[in-house]
Structure formats: C-alpha cells, structure tokens
Length: 154
Image (cartoon, rainbow, N blue to C red; front, side):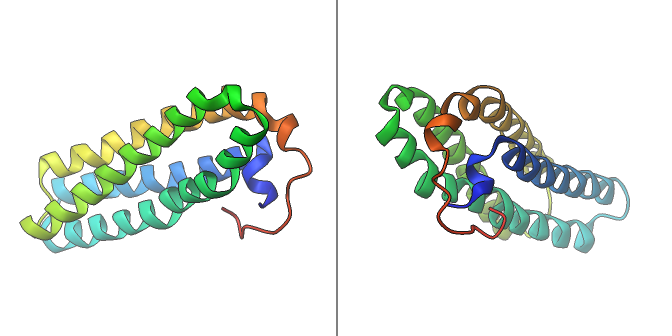
C-alpha cells in the first residue's frame, strides 16, 4: 500500500487534484453547451468520463483493495464508516456508468447528463470531506507503517 493512501495530507492532495480536474472539466462542458455545443461538448463529456474513471474511481478501487480491508482487520469498529465510504464509491461508479451509457445512446450532451456530472462533484466533495475530516484521522494510527509498495499516486 502506498503512503498516499494512508497519509492524510497526501490523501487530501489526491482528492483536491482530482476534484479540481473534474470541476474544471464540468465547467468547460457547461460552457461548451451554452456556446456552440455539439461535437465539442460530446468530446469534452467523453474526456470527463475518462477522467472520472482514471482519477477518481481508480483511487476508490485502491482504497477498497488496500486500505479498507486493513482497517477492518485492525479496527472492526470502523465497519459502518467503511460501508458508507464504499457506498459513495458505488454511487459514483453507477453515475459514471449511467452517464457513459446515456451519452453513447443519445450521441450528445443533454441537460440531465450535465446534472449527473454535477451530482458526481457533490458526492465526491462530501466523500472526501468524510474521509479527510473523520475517517482517516481515526484510522491513521492503526495504518502507520503499512506502506509496503508505491501506488503511483493513487
């Protein structure tokens, strides 16, 4: 497990970078719809979905594979907190999958599709806040010294 998954400051940096990237992408998408729209918006939406998969959901997967099992092993009382964080990940995955499917079917960016990107931002923000303000501070001591391999920034 890489240190970026258990160190609060590094973890916050990962969240901040991903959130900024997704916010900027969503703003660009919204601007392209109010401008000329069409092909540009479609391309932006596809890139944004790729960013959600590569940045946010890959990070979530790393947490689920590396951090959460260790937390549950060492701190079983964190079961409910881990379940809530996993549920956030599942919601983000569902919204990304649904958005990808609808974008392919529609072939264009619609208002409801743009609303899903905004919903993703809200879920990500609340999830990161929960991890950074409550979860990681509570489990960090139990995870200290568990960094065995580099995660390449996950």
